[in-house]
Amino acid sequence: MLDNLLNPRQYDENAETMSSTFFANVYTYMFIALGLSGTIAYMIGADKQTFFSLFLTDAGTISPLLYVAMFLPLGLGLLIQMAYRRLSYPLLILLFGIYALSMGVSLSTVFVVYSLGSIASTFLITAGAFGAMAILGYTTKTDLTKFGSLLYMAFIGIFIASIVSIFMHSEMLEIIISVAGVFVFTGLTAYHMQNLKYISQDPTLSGLDKSKLSLIGGLQLYILFINLFLSLLRLVGSRD
Image (tube, rainbow, N blue to C red):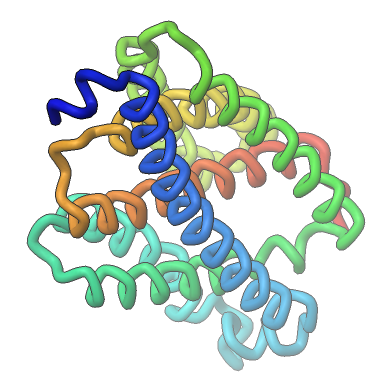
């Protein structure tokens, strides 16, 4: 500690090293989740016969498996983020893998509805917007805490409106939700990046805590990326 006080440059270098290692782990988890989800989604959704055999009954009605695929990721995501302190690190990794795979099953509907070209182009647009907001959140000196709180309130509104739209089948409501989603999820990306930066440079956290929080950070960024992608796809994607 005394050495750090006497040598600020060494202290800054140590903080930068800790931050780099932490974010390397965060993005590793995020990219693993994207890879798993994308692979499963393509394997199921690109072959419509496989998709319909899984999610439609012989009578032509929706299979209960589709509802499981839709709501299992929500439950797992909440469990991981709310109970990570009590769960062991290996168990968190297992739940994270199951989450990514189940999300892939849920996302397979994207390949049934939209053309492969529009999915690819929207993914690239999402990556650009996400990357820009991530850099902004990491580098900005402005405290985004209040901004993040407002965005989470807007997110709750979007979530409720999305449930309503399922029953209303309103195209205008879906457009409004998608536009709002683009702003909310890009803003939350910057907010979470700033939070993760503070966590990465916190010397009071143990190695185990940092490992768990890097997984949680990867999960949060993955969720934001997927939601931003879906919002943009509803706006600019061409249906198959």
